[in-house]
Structures are given as C-alpha cells and as structure tokens.
Length: 107
Length: 107
DNA sequence: ACATAAATTGTAAATAAATTACAAAAATGA
DNA sequence: TCATTTTTGTAATTTATTTACAATTTATGT
Image 1: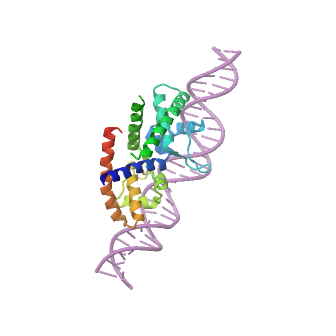
Image 2: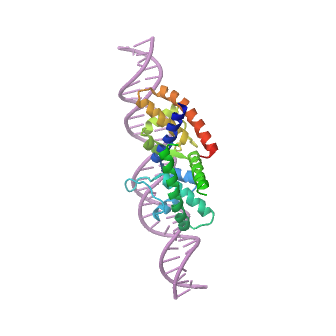
Image 3: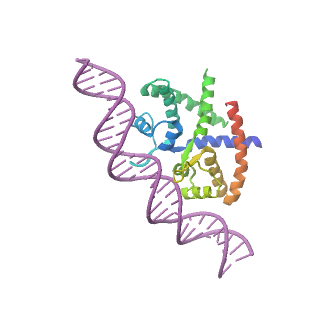
C-alpha cells in the first residue's frame, strides 16, 4: 500500500512541473539572471514566455526556466550567449526525452 | 556516458524544486485557488510564505504549493478546511520522506 | 584607427498586480 | 434568535512589470 501512494505522489510531481508557471521576478530570483536580461533573451527568441495579451505580465514554464539556468551555466564558463543557446537546445532535447521516459514509467 | 548525464539532469530537477519560488498570482493560476483564499489560509497559519519585509510580495516554495493543491483536493471532496489541513500535514510528511530518499539515491 | 552596425544594458512613464485594513456576508453553535 | 467565528469583498496604497527610447558596449569591415 505504501508503494502505490509513493507512486501517486511522484507522478503528481510531474503533473506539477507541467502546470508550473512563474513570473519574471521569481525566475530572476531562482536563476540569478536580471529581469532585463531575461527580457532581452526573449526578444532574441532564445526563450519563450506565455503571455496572454500585450502588456500583461510574462509567465515562464518549467522548460524555459531550465533553459535559462543551463544557458547561464555555460555563459559563466565563458561561452557567448548564442553559443550557449545552441548547446542548450541539444541538451534540452535529451532531458525532455529522459523526462518523458520517466513520466511514462511513473517512477 | 548517457547514464551519468541523465543522472545529472534528474538531480538537477531536485535542485530546481529546492530553489523554486512562486508569487501568489502564479500559485493561484497553478492551483485554481483564488488569491484571497490563499492569503486567508496563510493568515490562519495553514500555509507559510517566504516574505522578506512587510508589504513586499509573498513567495511560496514547492512544499507549500503542494500543500495547497492537496488541501484543495480534499476540500473538493467535501472536507472542511481544518480537516483537510490536518490530513495533508500527515501526507506531506510521507512525501517529504520519499523525496529525501530519492534525492539521496540521485535517481 | 576609424566608422558603422549589432548587441547589450539603463531608465522613465504607464500599466498591472499585490498588500493591508476594514467591512460585509455566511456559517456555526448555544 | 443572537452572538461568535469563519470566509469573502473591495478601496486605497504600494510594489512590480511593461514598453519604448536612449546610452553604452562590443563586434566587423575598410
């Protein structure tokens, strides 16, 4: 019985990540990237936000927050923004794959 | 080699959840609970927010967002707020335990 | 070196969202 | 019913975000 409850609680966490949305201020707090820079990355098409109408506040999902964290890591190592973005795109695909596999197995 | 990268990416997600902070508007969007109600639950001491100084915006961590989701589920089933909060407190402890075990094993 | 273009950061004015505090409404129990 | 507690509404103020334009820094070619 313990087992099934644990399973439920873990798959719940994937549901959680899927529903997750975070404002730009919190993303900045989480990642350490200034809001100005986040907007610039978005302007350049490197990250995407879920903005309803024009003028409304930006919302970022899990995938894009992860992307920013990874890009920041690479830039801290000395890569340019564009180079980092390219590298991250590839890593993201692998992570996505792994996550899907896990989600399917529900563990 | 693929294995170690997957491991890194998954442990990264635990790091992510640990760093996660979300504003009240986004929590409302994620959970479907009105902001007014979230503030009231906090006033009653059922959930906690990480607020720096007085007057600044509330921030909620992963644990408290999970708590709200669980409470809402129970209330939708007909339990009162207090009864739901009690039940959830117990379930939370188990989830926490499970999460810690997983985090330790890095899988 | 120099000029030009491109990339990045700063900031003011306007808009959106959150806070607090007080009050109104609903529920609970004697 | 009446009194008490719980829950929701909302106005005024404060905080945070958006956009747009400008300033600065960095790259590129001559």
